[in-house]
Image (cartoon, rainbow, N blue to C red; front, side):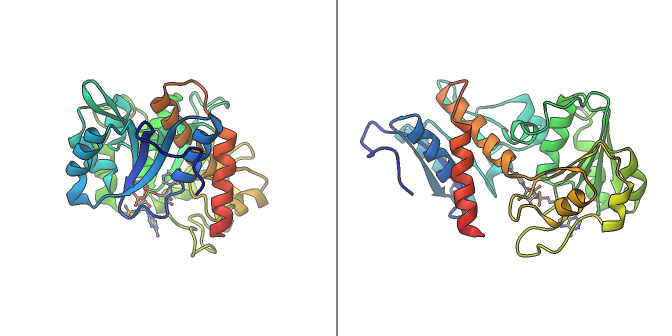
Length: 292
Ligand code: NAP
């Protein structure tokens, strides 16, 4: 990975913590953007085991790390180690972006902004969203659609207990007002009224690329105006999105979300309104090309 700068003692540090972290696509995206901007900054992958999280944060503070991303398994666990998190991160229950201030470490969740980026130009007020899956990514989608004043947000899961917990976890949140939870058996009745159908399950991800969360025949129940969105970015398109395209629906994959959550993080760290999103997108495509 070529860096834009020869690192010196003055080089500003950014990075990502995860366990494992070696497959992260973020260093390529972020370093491409930093190089394009001509900044003396680098973004590094840091493998941090769960038991070393607190020590890692202390170390980052000691060496002046400006900010970092957190990925699996740290997105929830890191919250208790931060000095402040945004209301959005509280609602989602996960932090993926952290930065250092005079008050200590602060965190937010830029997955929501990333998810919304390719769809926010459409009118969603009063619309109906159907979300497949009730894990971490589904929480970012719920918060995102609530921000757009979506009228009905249906979350579909396979485990009644987890669904109940999911519903309860939004009880005191401004983002949970229009939320309903459903079992997969109810999907056929939910599909005709969906304006947005989002897959947040890993079904269809490499190597199980021939799988789709929705049976082919059920796609016929979707309206002609529906937007079908898969958070998966490899493969692209997934079987789910291929089915949607065959039925003539608008289909969006997870690559823009990935780029835009990174761009949102970079804007925070650099305190700039604009970062080179297109360069980040090209760097991601190049990395994904290497994986394919
Ligand atoms: P997660 O927390 O593990 O949640 C996965 C959800 O999918 C859970 O609700 C799980 O149900 C459900 N699920 C898994 N296998 C299933 C199956 N065979 N049938 C029915 N439901 C199933 O994972 P996550 O962090 O939300 O990530 C989910 C997906 O989103 C991954 O593919 C990830 O790569 C993608 N993602 C993309 C981006 C992006 O930037 N594009 C960002 C975040 C995530 P149970 O709870 O019942 O097990």
